[in-house]
Image (cartoon, rainbow, N blue to C red):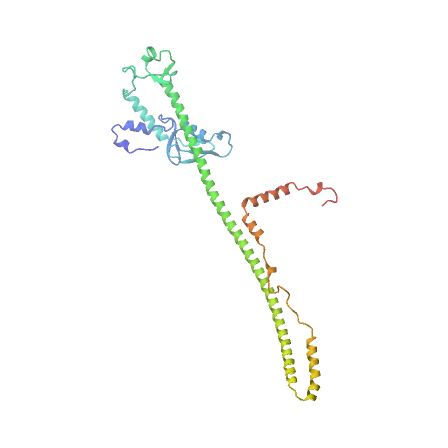
Length: 350
């Protein structure tokens, strides 16, 4: 129960006290008030039970220890009730005693004439004291006897008041229950947003890790291909350099023979020339008949065999998509699901 400090300063403390004793659901004075722990707000036990039943429609069928959730209609604080439901809440005896004292005081005082009672628009001296059921409007006795409602079905205001007060209480309970359901949906959506963000973060981290692995594999493959090119280059260079050495040796040998032949041509002695020329010419002929040195093949200096075709790889990377992996997993699961059991296969079939 909320105690208002203005009650002390009000000119009519009893009227202010009456406002403090009104149930926020039925708008009547508390009847068997119960306190909704721990927020300390009060409700009629019947009103609290109506709100609880509206928010927990399947509660009577439960067998668990917990009775269900109850959200205070005043402050929206949520309380978990036990298996007794609203009837397990504590009765507010202090408020009941205050209500009893208030009623005794009201009964002991002379009844005051109610002010500002609505008057009939057609009959200004007549108070509105009946309700036209046919037209669904309050009216006065003169309208029923002589006026527009003389052929209508009417009822005392108090009867319709109690009925509509009960309907209003039910509407309030439905609103409270509806608000509880909306709040539950909001909580579920907020939890879904939180779960979605966490799942997205995990997927982003997984995707980053996957592309790091792809980059690592690409770098390893690149290093392997570069190493193969370097090895082929080294082999060809070694072969070409060895041929250069051989050709240089042959050139040097040929130059020596040429020098000897030139010197021999300068000999003036016939005998000396004839003694040495034959041997020198045989050496020159033998050198000319010698085995030919190796040569490089056409296109030796090209490295065309190391041309890399990456078009299909690039196309695969461009077509890489999440749905592709998902569908592939589904196809694998379907294949496993419909795989023929071994015991049902014909003999000899693997």
